[in-house]
Image (cartoon, rainbow, N blue to C red; front, side, top):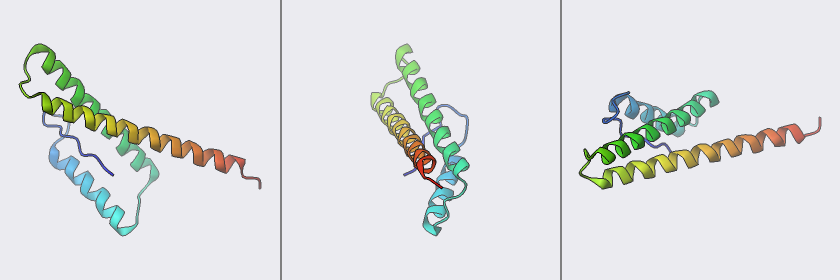
Length: 106
């Protein structure tokens, strides 16, 4: 699953580039080509960073009174939570695979 954060508040990357990354990931999944593991891991890390940044901006705007709709903040917080949980599970699977390979006797 690929979470596409809404970056219109932050302005670091455009929605079209993030949507293009999501489309590329979906195309790779459909064709069975997963791509480089490094790229997948980097996408997950970038996704976590972007969603965390959006959450921080929302929290700041709420604290100074610039945010009228609290539901947007809650949605962005949930996205950040899911992105972080996904990254942690990916890390756990990588460590488990590494330990399995290291315990395999040659």
